[in-house]
Image 1: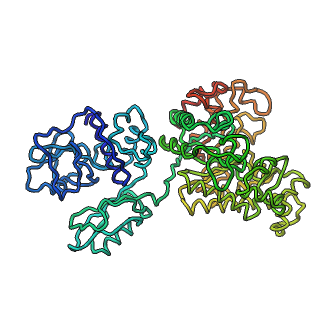
Image 2 (image 1 turned 120 degrees about the vertical axis):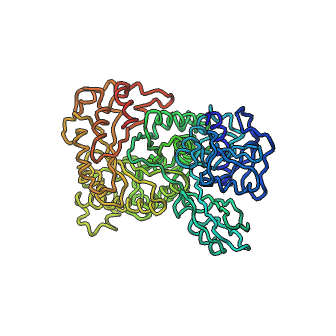
Image 3 (image 1 turned 90 degrees about the vertical axis):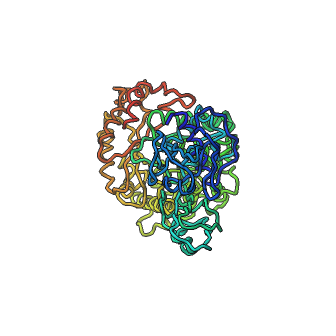
Length: 640
């Protein structure tokens, strides 16, 4: 098939798919000069035929429909079906987009729902073709009047592509039915429930084909409820992936962290105000285009740096890193997370919501938070201020020993999972404050220990208190993991702890990494921040040795190992002296790390910290500060 005809046909296929989902909007036909089937007469569709004639195209044909089934509707007429090459096809052949049917001298082209490439099936290849058209404005301009756009904004965008991507179709073939049997209302049913309902109505029907599991709910049925469907009728309906988003995650992670300090000055804000939506979209598209072009597949987007929300939330106050002003009482002019997800997913970039669960805002800032938020209510409550939330060095921290504080963290996570098409939840390395002394550090959670820690031992023992804290974090993680998986088992949850194993497990960080890495039910992956070169003066901090030590901890096959790397260390002016001279001794550190990890038996990915150490946030270019390292590693990412 010629390219111009394929694009024209694709537009009609997409329109047919969108209409199938019950979402089609009226549209005038665009004036596109393409070759269509030539009619010597007027093509007429019999009244019993379920397909729709649209100019020179016969639309609404389901995948797996055979030539014989189509010709059945034209019994008694001189009819022939040919493929895209003009060869007559047999009755048992399956129809494909681009085939033609000629009836009594009049010819039209067939449009098979979801078959964009003309191979007779609807699969990921068709979705990829749709994406290449929908997200490329140069290609879509001519099709605005043909392709049904779903969002009502008058343009073909990634939102329309996503609507196509997530709609799935199932078809039941009626084998027999009483003459009085009427199709029931299948709305809200699963595939299995729909089949049962049809059988109870008197139909004998088999699932003819499906691309979804039994969790999917009927969103639309082509044959309306009450219709009398006889033998041979096809009852098609569209289902969603159990009414929830199907997360996009990769077995081999090639990620990058995008954090709030970048966002505060460039991405989300312009001056003291939230950046206008148009310029925000432009910058996000630039970020995603940079990542996609060079081979990244996952972005870790900071969404909660200090007990706030970089998206509209009922659980946490709005972040000053997005909203106007410098307090936590601003308002959103649009939802930045929704837009980011839309743009990222259109380029198949996975988005992980990066959260800091315990670290809160400063003492003065919390005093100004709206009283509708639990954090402010606890601040005002003398029994909670100092226990649920505790001030330390001018900043508040959440104490995870209390069920109510853990529930706040869970509620904030589930708000994201339920309201957004998020692919995963990602924690940083901040949990408890450091614990190094027997005075102020122990005072942080003395009340909680008195209430819950009697079985651990002496309240004045540092080792006892560390174990108590490790177990409180473990309890929090189990509750988070369980809540996420109960909602959508495909949303992943992981943590990026500090790279020093001893500081985590037995030291001041109180992070029980051995349990997380060896026992299912805590995390889906661990991403230690191995921010050192191969030449660190302390052997245990050397990149290869440290990575291997973490790999040895990951004994649970359910827990993936992803390595965090410090691209920010590789500046052109990095020193060749000090405890980690490798960054100054050579400029291929990251490249050698990628090579090391590519064949590592346990590592399944890596994350760069941070985005602006590779890219200029305001341009399509690369960071000039780290250009020498970038030149050595950027070409390796696609093939990693």
